[in-house]
Amino acid sequence: MPISFSNIPSNWRQPLYWVEVDPSMAGLPIFPLPALLVGIMLPIGTATPDVPVPCQSAALANSLFGLGSHLAAICAAFFKNNASQEVWCLPVAEAVGATVATGSITVATPPTQAGQLDLYIAGQHVPVVVASNDTADEVAANLAAAVNALPNLPVAATAAAAVVTLTSRWKGSSANDITMQDTYYNGPGGEQMPIGMTLTYSGPQLTGGAGVPVFTNAISNLGEAAAEFVCMPFTDSTSLLAWETEFGFTDSGRWGWMRQKFGSIWSAYRGLYSSCLAFGATRNSPQVSTLAIEPLSPSPVYEWAATYTAKAARGYTNDPARPLQSLQLSSILPARLHDRFIMSELNALSLTGMATQRTESDNVPMIARETTMYQLNLYGMPDDAYTDATTLATLAALLRNQKAAITSKYPRHKLADDGTQFGPGQAIVTPSSIKAELVAQYRIDEFNGLVENATAFKANLIVERDSNDPTRVNVLYPPDLINGLRLFAVLAQFRLQYDRGLDVTASTNQIGTIG
Image 1 (cartoon, rainbow, N blue to C red):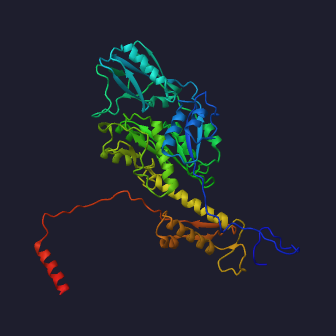
Image 2 (cartoon, rainbow, N blue to C red):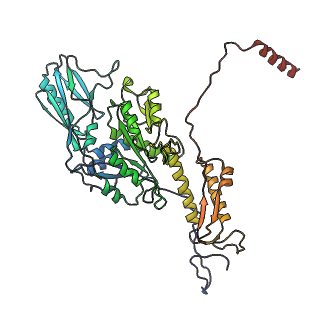
Image 3 (cartoon, rainbow, N blue to C red):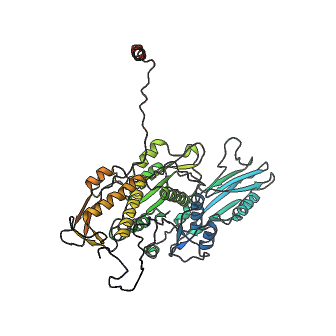
């Protein structure tokens, strides 16, 4: 009985027709690639802190985490850029002893003509109509009322003596990134401050927020749940270290050999060019990609991080080997033209572990290069093995495809040396048959645009039976990952006039050919 059955016993004697179904040669690999959004919830939210929960709409996020909360804003920004991804959220409570962030807007002089004040809080438009005879106190009161009429804003407002005080709805240092400005679209025919009125801000952002959540329990409660694209808007060293460890290559990390969960972390960092350079030099993680943001962008960092994660998730779910460059970050307000990083600064940031974005004529920022924070090898020498996040995304897809093929086709097989004579249909594999399977899978991956150079791969692939353990197969797997088109360099070697002698020769040759 050479055919290996899994269920029909060899001693079964009852007639007539019995069949067992084997799906090992039929199934195609399907991998869920959920996003995980991390942020602070308010006490009014119905979710349980540190426990992941599925969330597929901004409305549900408002209920789970509290209207106007840090995590609700992250969810809203994500869904504006990616409505099809499976999304889980990991709400965390405010840190013990954390403080709120505050800021003030002073109506320095009242208007002399009626108009509309176009205020922007955390990048969200707050229109305030003013009358020509409004006093400074009245303008401040109306401004505070307009802010409070939008409960999804991350602040609450009070007014007294012509001063509007904004207070963050949640506590912690992340609230310091809530911005305040006006007349963002102030070009010709655009928004204009009402004539005669002037405002004074305590700063471009709120200040005074202190405290960062502790992620120990949250990460532990995540367990082995899939988390392919993590939005992590906290960039302090303690928080980043905790998440880098969870997604690291060690035995306990998600990229380690024991867990094989994979995944990536997406974030954003606001600062001057010099500050972003300095921050990039502090990390060295291939799993983390942090977008450098100009100081005067109205949109808060946590929304930048959410949109970056959303577009990365959409792009890599469709094709993990395709670059993310040019994907637009919808709903984000970039810094004004004169406040943006210039091209030489963007290039230097890319060389120092920072992902980059830039804005073209449509005023919608887009991903320029999805650089990771990896820069040095174990000996501190420059290394570009994981320069782009696309590398790990492609590698994860290859390893998942390979694992699916091996575990589906050889779940209960016997292992024999090459050259062993066994009957057809036996559940037996040899190093050569495993190698053939890996080459076949590589051909499929090549057809799907994940790898190249199958001939070289086959020549360098090693599959051997372990000399000390006859039940073990060892594989040296050398894929050649396909590369993205990142640069198109042209040497424009122009002429003012081609040599006429060359033209005559060419013409003569053509005539001779015709004749």
